[in-house]
Length: 428
Length: 190
Image (cartoon, rainbow over all chains, first blue to last red; front, side, top):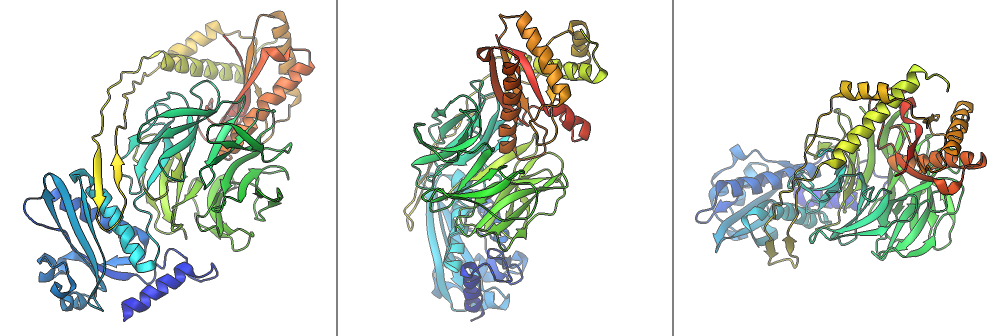
């Protein structure tokens, strides 16, 4: 009963308007106790596979802030017994440990492929909540765990988790600023560019299979797109002056960006082939950093048209611009939440950036970071539960994620060099 | 020619060091080793989606340490470049009286060297948003260009580019560094 009550509470919190006391994505105070047992090997399976799955899944569950994990040392005999249907699970044992859910699974190798079957049971109601079978290469074990973590969140909250996605960012660890890609937990990092120049400001296409970025490779800040799998790369816009901060419209058919071809920096819309569709803003001020509303009908952007850099919202259809009424003298890098209800941004105050979110009407401002150092470039996870950002709180700039209420701060980029400009992909 | 202040010399030294660093960095041939990551497939029989990953290449990079004292020595002997950097206030692109004087001398130098084409590079300090600063750097470079054009310099000889806060002369976080980094540089185009 209690699980059901908690689940409905979590669900309510996730769907309730922002006025709730407790943050949308981090109920925190009331976590659901889960028992996460290790996969049981059927036949010979390398122990590393079992451990990788266990670690990845548990890290994701804890990061979500929705769960507490029952101490594995207290597990009783049922944890070592293969029982993949609810009639074979000894729920009494799990209830004794205070677990309200139990994760059980098996793994085996079939013709070199790794097969993982894993299920989440509701201890109170002695029933299956969700189950998945994954078949893939042995090296895909962490990805399987991320997907099951997403599945657990979906079955308990109605909203899939963000763990099976990637984060792109810029790092100068090679000596040049290049584009990198990592998993949400910071693993499986790869470098995507070798421009040996300055690469900046990536953005994922809605399919997550392509990235936009700006590079000085040809001697000017030009906009490029790159297909992640094939590695194919094309220059999209190389107009004189700035071709920066390109952002795919959520339908994937247009790109908003800043061009300065006429001398002044304004927002424009391009086709994905680089053709010019139209000029969005025409103002003597600097207009940069567009961020699409999820419906693709509005653009939040930064402009100094009232003196200092502030956030404005442009309506694509009515062509009206209005200020996002926020405090502070210097607000930048807006990022529209995937649900469309809030905008994250960074504010420069006393020489330091910190991250805030605010409702789209400017009400209900919440400060998420409190130093030390600079915390900038917020971008939302595809489910809106997390924010990725860059911070120099421990010296060099690095990529961090936190829950949307500012809790659960976790560094994800590897040591070495300065890392910034993160972008969170959609679900992979 | 008027005498250089210590600060201007320091700026110049740093600038040339940076240029040398860049030049030596570019000259290196990439030592490429390509490792293909094998293609993998995950199927999920209760879902519908597939994962495919393939072929992300990593290149080896070489890095060269440059002896600072050596290049500084080179600077002091090679010193007198007639094109001078100008500096700006925080979040500003207006030209101070000092900057205007320097631009007058830069314009005169160009008149004396009519074959010269110049690239004006706008830079910012590290404070502020990167994208905004790219636009600000563009404005600084454009402000310098229009002033020189108003002095009679042929606009065809002047191109502009912004590096925002990307290439600071002094990467530390101090008021002195910030002041040094908020600048427009003038470079002869080959």
